[in-house]
Image 1 (cartoon, rainbow, N blue to C red):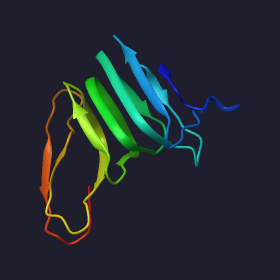
Image 2 (image 1 turned 45 degrees about the vertical axis):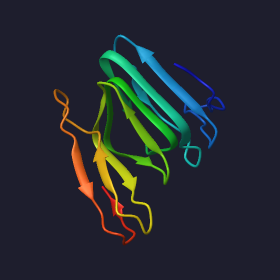
Image 3 (image 1 turned 45 degrees about the horizontal axis):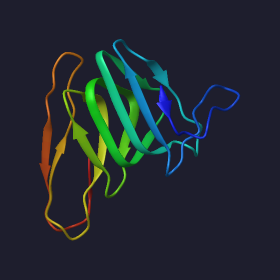
Image 4 (image 1 turned 60 degrees about the vertical axis):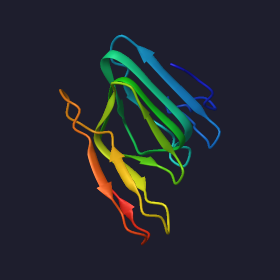
Length: 136
């Protein structure tokens, strides 16, 4: 793991922030990453695991760019939230589990959810009208 997160607390949880970035690299899985409650936001998150995955042990919000270069980002019962204005860059990776995106207010928008199963990528799409709402 390489990144500019603020550090770890005494329990081994990451301390993120609105300007923090985290890069998860490897040829195998990383295991489970956990963030301190109230410090569970990253500006950028890069997941690049050629033959593995990383799991979220708690909720996480990305406010800049989520880069799914390869492998799987598993949310389990947690939710990966893309903040308003955040975007996803996808190579061959995807999210297994819950991915939330916010629809911009007053704009008709088509969204792609970069999700799938443990074995395959199965993107989901959603279109909105001009009414504000959250897509899940």
